[in-house]
Length: 168
Image 1 (cartoon, helix red, strand yellow):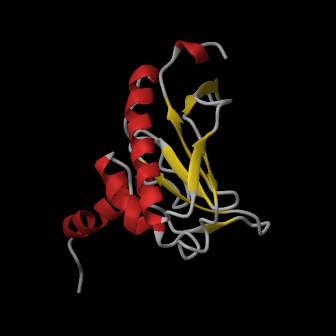
Image 2: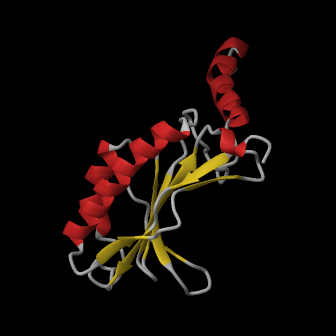
């Protein structure tokens, strides 16, 4: 049976266009929203980080969190992006075992992350060299939350618009 050319084109063309326009499966998605201004980002994401730390404290009460004092800071990246690193918090105590290797953190953190526009936590990633284990979550503007086990560490960073990076 011969299939009319117009029908064949109507069926195959969308699939061909989709496969040509989509990038490689392993290509990073990249931000879909523009980078916020530094001041607005500091306020917005500090609130998100505070809520995440509160949820961590409830989920794993045996870990005490302390903000490191060298943050926040902005730095220009080689690709020209300006990135704001908010106050990392260092945990004292064991985060890994009480959270079943970080896998149980999603139950307490995902609702908080969703409230602040973040995707759910990733699966647990184990470093290739046998070192750290961590989970991450990102938002549409390219901000990333990272919760690490060894040592317990929570950090939040992402792109911003800032004069501090112009020409850097």
